[in-house]
Image (cartoon, rainbow, N blue to C red; front, top):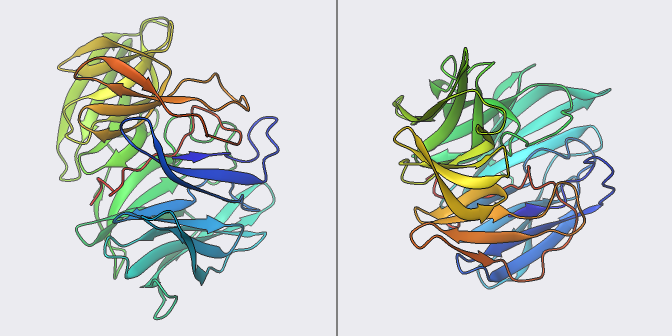
Length: 333
């Protein structure tokens, strides 16, 4: 989990926190690093096996190992006007990264590259004005987030990558083999962090709110449907479970987290904003109100409907609408 998102509201953080948290609420290992000069709202880490790779400042790629130690890996081509977003392959031998160039108030171009983790044999597989970057590897292909080019007002409120679409692409050619578009194009929205089962798409059709589970194989399944009601509807982000059978989302009236499945919303003991699933039965969620320096999180065990607070030790400033969560090892593989 990531905290300290950077220039968020009145936040003036220069550091962010990276935490590996157990399903029992324990903080297992952690690290801190410098927030980037450009594109502070974009992802900063990648899980490969039990290792967590992260960017410190604009260029330093580091690794948080399973024993809790931190090591230097490589220097990335980032800088005040160039933000690098990367994804390390599951075997920790390769990396894919986008160099996103900023000018004025927003990002204007992308260069997507693939090479060895040590920085050798790097080659460009895509360049253009669209802003897209890898967020993981799946069966040897890249999962890519596509975003809008302007700096967002509330980055990550709907999903932690600020994505308007996801693509699956060949890691050698960038040829696209799957896209959530056009199924989930605006005014629909992909929600929550992705995993091996896919992602959630919220569709509003007339006076009806619909949540779909979209699979990487092109499948779609309806999870929830309800008449639009300002107090009773689910609010973003909706987070798909790793088995693809349900999603967790807060309900507008009191932000009580409910499980969306089979067309119904079943309330749980948790109140807050869902961040991501450890497994099919354990959900991490944020409990602190928006934009406060006190960061609070907890784990919901949906099988017993019990809540376990995350042990004290989370530091920094964070918007609970925008935590970045990836399971260790990554469930995207």
